[in-house]
Picture 1: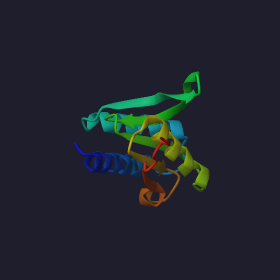
Picture 2 (picture 1 turned 180 degrees about the horizontal axis):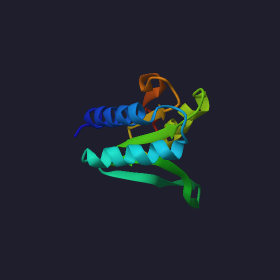
Picture 3 (picture 1 turned 60 degrees about the horizontal axis):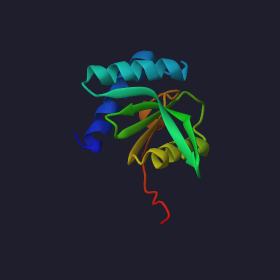
Picture 4 (picture 1 turned 90 degrees about the vertical axis):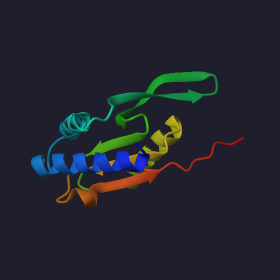
Length: 129
């Protein structure tokens, strides 16, 4: 599957979860339900995937945790907030940069229509030589 096909499938699963649960729940509930739908659709999913951070000769094995990593190619950050602040988008960009993954989805389930809480992010970071 291409990244576009994967993100299309993820979006469909997320809409299904949102239609059934609606807004107002904790992020953890949406994350587990979305993981369940993604697995049912045949995708490989890792929840709370540890992300290491390298700083010079220091390695922090689990500096961050990705909410969901799908098919080793799409990062999903799940939120349930009144408004998505720019720092949340920065968080996804950082995950993409640290993992060298190209595509991420930032999903805020605390909205009337999920399409209003969905942002697709593409990693265009080029490390210095």
